[in-house]
Amino acid sequence: MTQRVELATVMDRLAVDGLVTEYAVAVDDGDWEAYRGLFAPDGRADYRSAGGIEGDAGQIAGWLAQTMELFPMRQHLIVNRRVRFGALEQDTGDTARIQADYVNPMRFAGQDGGSTEPDFVCGGRYDFGLVRTYNGWRLREVVVHEKWRRVTQAQQEPAAH
View 1 (tube, rainbow, N blue to C red):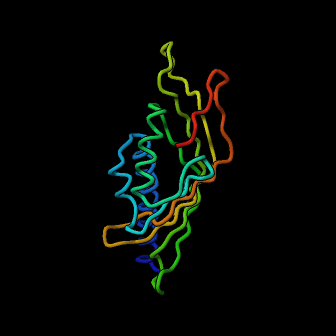
View 2: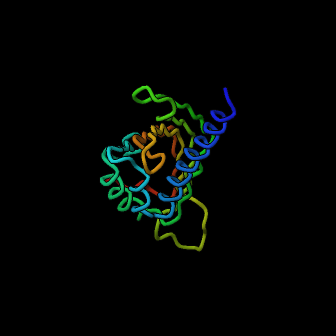
């Protein structure tokens, strides 16, 4: 590998890692415009394994905006990011796949007592599909594979929207 290719690969790794971080921040901050902006025009997400929906970025942003009202405190921790670059139309490096584990502590709205401790925690793995666009790397696909969840005894899970 030449130094130019190695530098390009490092820059791409930083860019796709940054995109995953922006994804987590947009969801945690409830910035649904930023969330939609992270996706390619044909981008889709699938939250069905976590009790959600599957759809395009706009549909998912609307669903998340409604659902996340239940959890005013939330914090995605996306770790163990495994990045693989691929080819699109014979151009090496135009696609990427990222598998990353997540832990997502949240707190239900309306809790008394002043505690900030999470009362709903879930974890699993994200499968991100990315594509290089004229505007940089964008999400083409996000699939959530929830593996576990814990809800404090005093809480009941909200119905999925």
